[in-house]
Image 1 (cartoon, protein in one colour):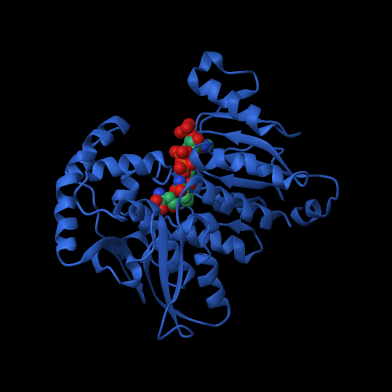
Image 2: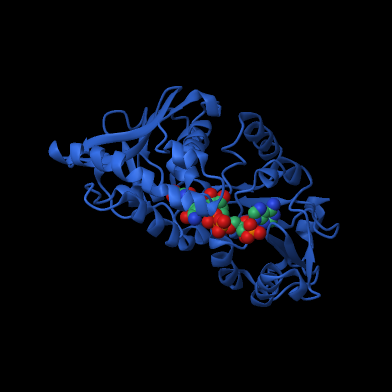
Length: 360
Ligand SMILES: NC(=O)C1=CN([C@@H]2O[C@H](COP(=O)(O)OP(=O)(O)OC[C@H]3O[C@@H](n4cnc5c(N)ncnc54)[C@H](OP(=O)(O)O)[C@@H]3O)[C@@H](O)[C@H]2O)C=CC1
Ligand SMILES: N[C@@H](CC=O)C(=O)O
């Protein structure tokens, strides 16, 4: 069936974009580059969606959903309420492209089933291949059977990290170790931080810049980095699960206990003292703080490190990710990849690249 549809000359592929937040909104204007081979037919947030098998104008769909979100009574006829479970219209089928631009656990749990149905899945959501090992394995099984899964945006916001690890393995190389800064938010927070300004104010800025996860505690706890390290480790042939990674969380009890966005924001000040002490201590030694992920064989750990200024992993600025890869080929001096690792623009561009690959 999928192969048959792929051969149809005059039917643009349908595109569904789930998620219209920082990343989803940045993707929409870029889709014009893929017309007329691709037609946006579904746009959804967690509670509302616009859908039309013949195609939707992206700007109007976004505006209609925004009206519905502002107040259900204002919802235009073109918008329907939905339960966020990822049920798709019957007309969305094999050969069509689905983009997951959410951080939804429920949607990530559907990736393998969507692939099995013949959909091409492109994701910024790390909970698919960076979630439970079994979920990763289900997705890989579908890919081995010919399904198309684009996950470039999940690590380094599209930096050629995952591709590099996979290419090394495909060429018969063996990735023995990885080390790097994998969080754009934490890179940005610790870039130039010497403890003299409130860390909490920096976190608020990183959220405003669109670097942080929908809940910034996912960055501060190391959970976002854990997901990325799992994705890289699995690509390197290490079938690790979340519990195999030793993680140093930066969360304080006050942040752990926060119940909603407002109390999380208020609890951010609890970070200020502890982190300023660590930053001043590092500065006194001529060092800087970096939140580093390390994989050595099957051993994985993540945490805050005090590194000399000249250290390879202390380089890079702003939200840069910087990752060193050791393999048989790169055994004496590692291969190093560096660049912006978060932000709406680079992430949306990485999704667009994957959508283009999925449709050509
Ligand atoms: N920001 C970045 O730099 C990067 C982000 N990513 C990943 O991109 C994803 C999105 O991040 P971001 O845009 O910042 O997050 P936002 O919180 O800004 O947006 C998330 C969007 O997803 C929607 N959503 C949530 N659950 C569902 C659901 N079940 N069905 C349909 N839509 C749903 C939300 O709707 P509602 O408004 O109703 O809640 C919202 O529109 C995350 O997984 C993140 O890890 C990856 C690389 C870089
Ligand atoms: N919150 C993430 C966004 C990209 O994955 C980060 O800061 O790296």
